[in-house]
Structure formats: C-alpha cells, structure tokens
Length: 207
Image 1 (cartoon, rainbow, N blue to C red):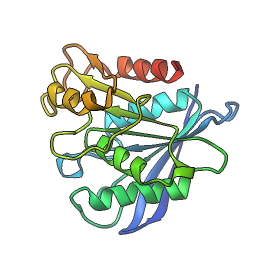
Image 2 (image 1 turned 30 degrees about the horizontal axis):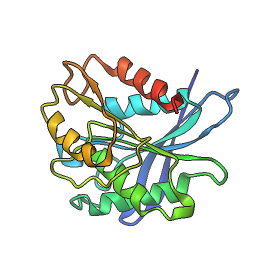
Image 3 (image 1 turned 135 degrees about the vertical axis):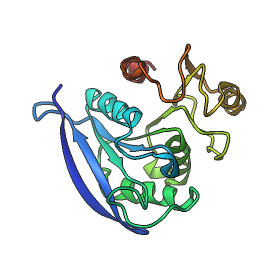
Image 4 (image 1 turned 90 degrees about the horizontal axis):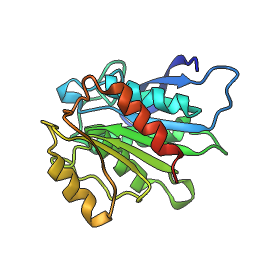
C-alpha cells in the first residue's frame, strides 16, 4: 500500500503544532484516524522517531490516516517543555483538530508518548472515546500512565534498558492487561521494527 504524507500546522494551547499526516493510497478506503505520540522531547524524541514512523506505517496498512505531531518546543511546534502536562494538552488539541466525524479514533504512542496517549484517552468525553490504544515501550516508571482497556495493545522489549519490563508488568497486572514481550529486544526496537509492525497489524485484527 502506497502512502502519502501531508504536513500541516494546527492551533495548539502553546501555539502552532507541527503535524505529519500519513494517508493510505488514493484507492484505499479510510478506516479511521490514528493519533500517534512521540518519545520524550528532552531526550531527542520527535514525530520522525523510527518507532513512531513504524506505528504510522502499521496504521496506514490497516487503512487509517496516521497523524504524527511534534510536542511543544520540538521542530516546528511552538512553546516549551511542560513536564508532561502541556504535552497531553497538545495531543488533545491534535485529536480535536484532526479526528473525523463518523470515523473511529485510535491512539498510539512510544515511551513517553505512550504515557501521553493514555492520559489523553482518559480525558476524552464518553461519547468521543478512542476505539483502541497501541502502546510501545510505555514509560511507566517516571510518568503515571492512566489505566487502559483490556483490548489495548501493549508491546515491550524483554531487554528494555530505559523502562524495565518488570515495571510494565507491575502496571499491567492490576488491569489484567496482556503485554506482548519481544525477546532480546531493547527500548528502541533496533533490528525489530519490521516485527513490531507485524505485531501491531496482527493484534489489531484479533478480537
């Protein structure tokens, strides 16, 4: 499936937010809109992170418009780091601007972005909830990820050097939330991005 990328600026609470929208080919029906959140802005995280791009490719394959965006102060986005609070506001602004009436909304994130995705999902009104979340390497140690539904897709590397697998299991256990563990894999999924994409698309189709 050939994808096209559109760049766009939208209004956010701290100024303009830079977005990249990856869309399925012209002959492909649009299944929904996926808003994807990138890793920690102070540690090199941007919307062009390879794991976030992999998330986008997976959603495009699933027929979604995949929306990546830069948090405040990164790339072409205005503002400055706000310790996670404003970054959740940024995600909510992107959701409000780019979700489409009548189409499902999916949320995804990698590392710090997974935290933002869970918090944004929790703040959406009941009649506008996301259909499902995809969380890769969720940064549950330093940021309080909100509880998520049991059909959420959580993928973590066995050898994650940033967020220990044990911490993710401790977060998931009270929720009876399944976690897919990729053996001998670190936080950034080096050499495993193709497998990561397959895991996302495969899990999405399973009930």
